[in-house]
Every structure is written in structure tokens, then in C-alpha cells.
Length: 434
Ligand SMILES: O=C(O)CCC(=O)C(=O)O
Image 1 (cartoon, protein in one colour):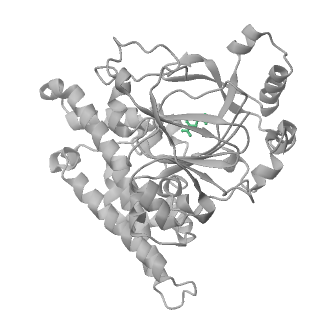
Image 2 (cartoon, protein in one colour; image 1 turned 90 degrees about the horizontal axis):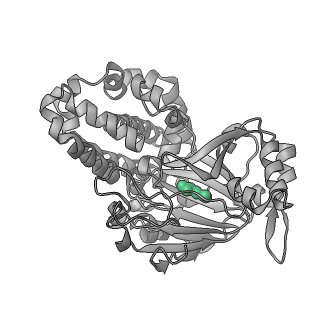
Image 3 (cartoon, helix red, strand yellow; image 1 turned 135 degrees about the horizontal axis):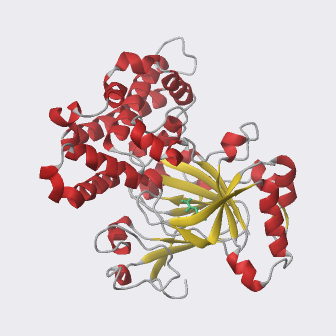
């Protein structure tokens, strides 16, 4: 990062194969710290199929394998040299076009100048959704209890049609991505959607990650907390971002076959969902506090702004946890039935921990202004039914799918802190990079 960023430490690297679930939770998930995990990808089909031998023990991407086996007609590609609002400009092309571009670059098909202006990075490819029969990887035990993915597999996030229509990308309910890009491609500074945690496996190549602890995230914002630094490689203006020069970063070089755990709230980077959502809510509220008196539906406006900024508002989150609680109650009931051959005390305890955790969060939420009787009167009928009409929830097809997904989940090594899953619903990502 050309010395522009003050790196104060390296991300810890641990052998994931000999780490227990309880240790992972104690050392990384609960304290919300990033870690690089090795030794977990040996049996993955992606490592075998997607790469070819390279120099030494390095592998290189087998691009023709992708062209032959995954000829997706339309993939999303970021043009790393053009900014569009807070992200890179996105283009759409076929997998073959993307590969042709990459191969063209590798063979010096463009001049240095052109090359700079045409670095393309395939991002957010919903590979698992598109090729469900091809099992590219096995989710490590540490990340199997993935509430958000389980929920989003069967539910859209917004029920309010005004938000849903404006935020189509959020309704795309799958967060299992593949990334592919040549040397020099990059992802701007950000915290993950929904302020969730995520994990990302590097199938081949090397990646540099820079992490900012959540306690410092305000420092990458301007003084009005409206926009954040886009590129750490730029000269960050002290005038616009007066606190930026106080930031202290952790760095990590992720090698092939290593998995990185990106905790909640770290830029890039993160906290637990509740806290962050709550912090974002307070910021959204403070921001418009001066128009409270002239606003018909002040809380509604706060919630709309919250959804626009984080992808989720309090009602979406409440609907999520209510459904998750119900699903846990039902599964708890099932695992305790004598005829269930796979009865497991550990699994039952796990559902109980989940429920306790949901109760704590829900009780906190209910004390906020969003849930006063008056404000609840003005929320949409859809939202209200979505958390209050249990009979309706039980009859929903999407809820049944959630139950099926949850019923497949089995505790391997239980630890009380597993309840942290509520705060840290994860996204799964895999990346392939040269
Ligand atoms: O691999 C990358 O380029 C970025 C991945 C990322 O930002 C993420 O997983 O949130």
C-alpha cells in the first residue's frame, strides 16, 4: 500500500485442521478477530479442477476448464479502473468474453496504457446457485452455522415493496460467490453487506488484505459520516477525511488454499450485526433529527435510510430473527422426539442457545423507538404480519424451506459461544486470483 496506510500488525495464521470449533469461537468468532486458516481445502474439487500445476508448488487457474464447464452467458465484471458511486463500474459479459480478455492481457494483447484501463475482475458470481450440482467446496465446520445464508436461501430480505423495488440487488438472496481476476485487480474499501461476517478461500494466487478494526471505522468517513474512503492507494484528502491519518491496519497476505475469516464490522471488515445495525440506526436517526418535528413518519424515514445504507432495517431484521426462532423451536421439538434416530443432545442444546440469543436481541430491539405502539401502527401490513402472524409464517413455502435447511444442520462440536452466530451471520465467498 505504498506506505500510505499504517500497518501495525499481521493477521494471525492458524492450522484449521487441528483447531476445534470451540477454540475457533473463543479465539476468533467471539472476540471478532480476523484469522487465516490453513489445511482445510485439501479435498476440495475446486482446488483440483480449477487449477493446473504452476511454478514450484504454486498452481495457476485453468481458464479453459471454466470456459468448457461453466459457460455462463452473463457474468458480472468490475472494471477496476472506473469508479461508479461507492463501487467499481460493473459490466456484464459472457464467461468466454471475460476469459478472452484475461488471456489477451496475459499475452500482452494490450499496451501498458490500455491494460491499466481495462483490468477486469469477475465478482459476485453466484456460482453455487448457478451450478448447484457441482460441489466445488465443503463449508468448514466453523462457518456451517450460517444463519443469514440459511434464511436468505428461502426468504427475500425486504417485504416493503418500495424498498424492495429500489434495492433489487439486495433481494438476490444468495451470498456464495466466486471471484476471478488477474494480477492488479482489486476491491475498494468496504464493510460487508448487512454488516455480516464472511469467509473467503483463495484457490490460487495471492491476495493482500488490509483490515481496520471496527472501533476505528469512523476514521475512514468524512466528518458528516456520509462517505467513506474508496481506495487506500489514493492520496486520501485530510480535509475530507480528517481522522484517516489516525487509522491503524492489520495486514495479511493470503496464499493459495488459505481461508480468511473476515469478522463482522471490520473495514474491509466488521462487527456483529446487531451492534452495527444499532449503530447505523443511531447515525441514521441523528442525521435527520433536526427534521423530526416536521416529519409525519420520522421512524419510517429512519428505517428507510437504514435499509438504504446497510441493506436491512430493524423490521427486516426482526422478521429474520422471528422466523429463525420459530424454526429453532420446531427443530428442537423434532430432535427430542423418541422416533428421531439422529437424536442429539448437543444439537438440542445448540437450538436452545440460539433461542436464548434471539431472546436477548429481540428484547433489546423492543426497547427501541422502532417498536413503540405508535410506530408499529405505521409499518406496512406485510411487515407486521411477517413477524406477528405465526400461523401465516408456518404456512409459508419459504419458511418450510428454511426448516428443511435447518434440519440438515447438525452440531459437531458445540460451544456456548455458538450463539454469536446471531450477530455474525456469514457470507461465503471463494475467490480465484492470479
Ligand atoms: O476478494 C476480493 O477482491 C474482495 C472480497 C471481499 O471484499 C469480500 O469478500 O467482502
